[in-house]
Image (tube, rainbow, N blue to C red; front, side, top):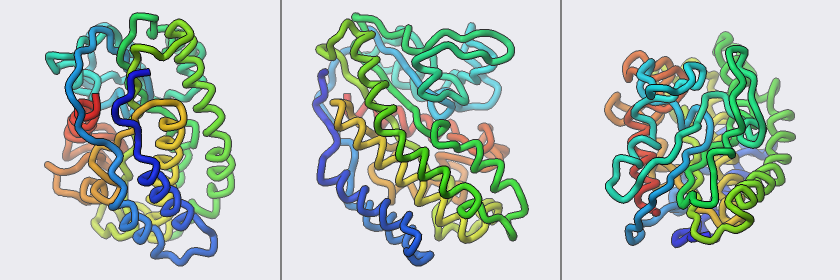
Length: 309
């Protein structure tokens, strides 16, 4: 696999310590903020010399598929909400990148990349079938639905003054996190097999998740989360990104965030000014989907991908 900018091991170590501290049951409530500060020292993507890619395949979930609301790529399944300005489209606008196929789809899990998916409207083929021995660039956004982002969304939509999502969901989230490393290793192995049993000539860029809120966010949108849940959701996102970065490094891929560090992403949550918002709560002000990346967030992720290929 051609990987000129694998994540720096020391950076991942910093993120791991921050995540474990933030998620510790004994940690005081302000440790999520401390974790974000510690992670500021952990850049996860650096610029590299440009290469040309003639067969780019985009795999993944809604954080890769969804940008501007209801503006879909022609010919794509309606169910997938595959926006014309998702990060794959912007990456492919670069003169050195030619998109072969974007098969990203909202709600996708690792199982949906490896196997068929019944949407109730149609049967979608395994996303991995888009990968061929000729594929030279893959972007991958996966893990959020395996962890259970939808469960968190349903929980926080309850009365924020009484929500206790950490108590309700914390144990099962920890269990799901513990299973993800081996599942991700299996996914990377399947990509290798689909590419002809080798990673030679293939660059894989795995993209992380921008946190919806941080523990210190206090805007009106952030109040949809209880104070305790804000810290927990931020720490959980950090834990997931840390895990994804470690799996990418372990399998020879490159991991990137939409900004240089997790701490930088704190400037792009639902509380950021509209023009700086990478994710949104309702999407009303950014023409995006609720609890998902904004068009600006998709653009920022494309810029991060282009910096490392």
